[in-house]
Image 1: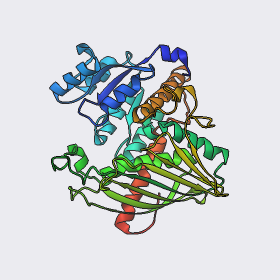
Image 2: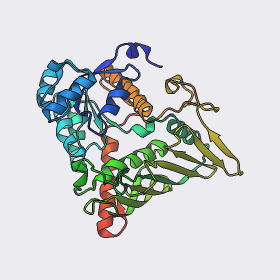
Image 3: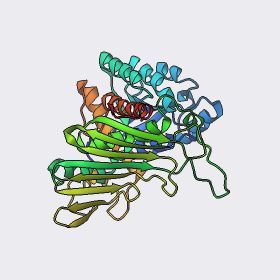
Length: 380
């Protein structure tokens, strides 16, 4: 584990949102504490008083640092806490993030940062004026083999990147449970705005991962979308063709109406010398195929340069690290970034991203939605 001094002195966190019944609260709680870089010390976990108290007890938070209002929390925790994590439903992110930045409190926000680019621009402007700290959590790039793949691409092993396929199909809006009952998603997920919620939930991940691996940006988009599941007013399937910088062509597909796929995140990157494939359901493996016909299966026990680092091997190869560990890797990176920010007022990272990438991602998914309306290619 790098940065042993920081690891021995965990920084303090507060949660806005993230109750026990939320989609991501417990995941953030466990992953932030995994490597002893953070300790959750306060929170306003829910507007429901009972749920708020139950979550605080489960997380081990003292009653005098459990708040019924997140605005009260910011006032009383300012100067006592290292960072706030915003885990509310996505439509409520904007107000909380802006309030944290205004108070000068470093903020970590679950993706998608906000629901529209105009709000992302306001956050970016305020962050710059306040010289504040903002990190957005995109956890899939925390998988060691995704980081290994980025290193392979940077070294030129794949040659010139020609095209890609990035997909994230799920089945949650069309399947039933063992008793034949339909799903009951969180209510805010069933109310599409100008940008459908599925774009914010899944499309933002694909945009981030393509940038993370290739360093290139979307230029033009043409997309289609529809609803096939139990909720006819909610978009649950999106396909997209993309033109990226440096002449890269791409395809994206994300869905919540793809039976048989629990979370079928798959990345395929095709180059002039070789191609690579990573599938989130087999996270420890990376498949490489070369122009001379060779195929290679790579994992943490292979001749790798990133995935064999001690920080990614909490247990030896053959004992798969997964979703929680990927989140923990990201939280460790964020801790490093915040340490640098506190000492110098600045930070940069290859693994942690803020408002700039979030803004580009929202502009991309806005272009997808506009393309559907116009039935034509749209510039990002």
